[in-house]
Length: 101
Length: 499
Image (tube, rainbow over the protein chains, first blue to last red):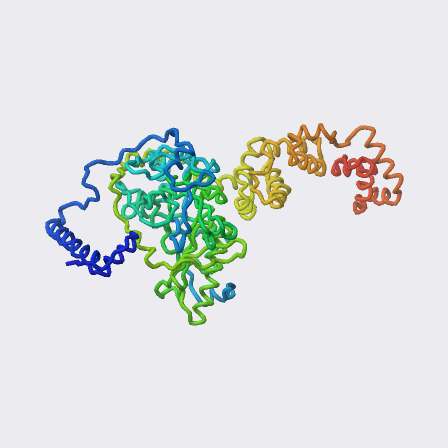
C-alpha cells in the first residue's frame, strides 16, 4: 500500500513551487494518504477485463482544419503582462531555470 | 575552461560509443497545433497569438488535423508503427518560455511508435538507425536574455519573451540507443539527420532549415568499456542546430568522456550546450529533479483515433523518398557514388534536377553547381539555394556554350555578372557584348598572323608535334581579348597547317 512520507510531500511542494511549512506538510501528507487509499480500493476492482483509460469521456478527439484566424494585436497580447518592453513580456531573472524541451 | 580530451582514435580503441538523437522537426502548418493562430518565422514579437497560445484561463486546445496528418506521413516515411490511439500529456516545468507552464506532448501513447531509418555511409554501406518513437508536441516561445554577454542566460538580469513560436507543432523523433557505429558514430548521426531533413522537405511538411531552428537535435552520448558492458552514464547536449554541430558534439563528447573515464573520473548525467564559437560543449544543469516533469494525461484533450483506412490513404499519397530518388537520379545522370555524395552533401540534388529539366546536361549542371557556384556559396557562407542564380540561368548559360556562343572563360564572366545581379545570362551577354570570335575572315587573319609570327611552331605543328599548340592559341586569345573558342582555334589551326 503506497503511503506518502513527509519528505515526498515536501518534494512535491518544491516541484510545484509551493512553500510548505511543517504543519502544512503534515496535514497534506495525511490528506494525500486518504486519497491514495481510495485509489487503492478502486484498483482492487479494476481487474484484467477492465480496459485502462486515461479519460472518462467516451469520445475521440475532434480535429480542426488548418485555417488561420485573426490573432491578437501586439497591444492586446501584452495587455495583461505585469511588465512589457519592446512588445515583449518582461520575465524576471532566470536562476537555475529549466530548459525548454 | 578547457576540458581534457582524448585523441579520437584512441577513445574509439578504448571505448564503445553509444548515442541517441532526439530530433525536433517543426511542421510548417498554417496554424499552430492547438489553436488557429498563424505562424511565420520572423514576424514582430507577440503578434501570432490567440488565447490558447497565451495560455489564458478558460481557453481550450483544439487539435490541428494537418499537423496530425503531417506527423503520420513522417511516421510512415520512418517506417514507424502508427498507433490507433494516441494521447496527450502535460509535461510540467518552470521556465517562462511557455505561458501555460506545461508543454502538451505525448508520453505513454505516442502517435508513431517504433520504426527505423536506413542511412548510407561514405564507404557505401547501409546502417539502420532504430527509432523508438516519433511523437507530436508543441514548441515553446523564445527568451531574449538581457544584460548578460551575447544574450546568454548567465549574467542576464531579465528576459524579454516572445511567445510567437509557442504552440507551433513539432514532431520529436527519438532513436533507440544506437550501438555498433564505433568510429563512424558522427558520420552516421550526420547522415541520419540529413536524411530526416530531406524526408521532411520531400513530404513538404517542414522548411527543414536548421539555421532557423526548423530542425534541431538533442545529442545523447555515453561510453562503455566494451559492446558487452552495460550502458554508461550519458550526457545530453541540447538544441544543436547545425549538421556540423551535431557531428562535432558527438566527437567532442566521445573525446571528453573518454579522457574523464580514463582518469578514473565519472561522467555526470547532465545537460550540456554546444558552443559554436569554441567548438566544444559546456556543462549545464545536472539532471536531478528536472527530470520530474510530473507527466499526466491532459484533461483538456481526449485521445486521437487514427483508423487504418486513414493511414492507408496517407500512405498512398507519400512522394518518392529521397534515398530512392537519389538512386534513380544518379543512374539517369550517370554520376559516380562520390559525385552523388558530394551533390547530396552540397544540397544540390534539387538544383541539378531542375537544371537538367531546363535542358542542360547533367555533367554541365554538376560542373556549375559543385564548381563555381559552390565556391561562391562557401565564400559568402550561404547555401546554394540562396545564391542569386536559378537553375534556369545555369541551363541558359549551358545552352549558350553548347550553341558555340560562349567559351568557358566568357561563360564564367557571364556567371559572375548573373551573381552580381546584372540579369539573366542572355542579358549579361548582351550588356557586355560577350561573343566568341569564331570562323570568318577575322579569326582567319589572326591565326595566319600568329603562325607567321612563330614559324618554328608552325613547322612543328605541320609535322604532327602538337606540343607547342598553346603558343598559337595564346597569341590568338591575346589578339581576340579572350573571345575566341580555344578548341575551335586548335582544330582550325591544325586544318590550316596541314592544308
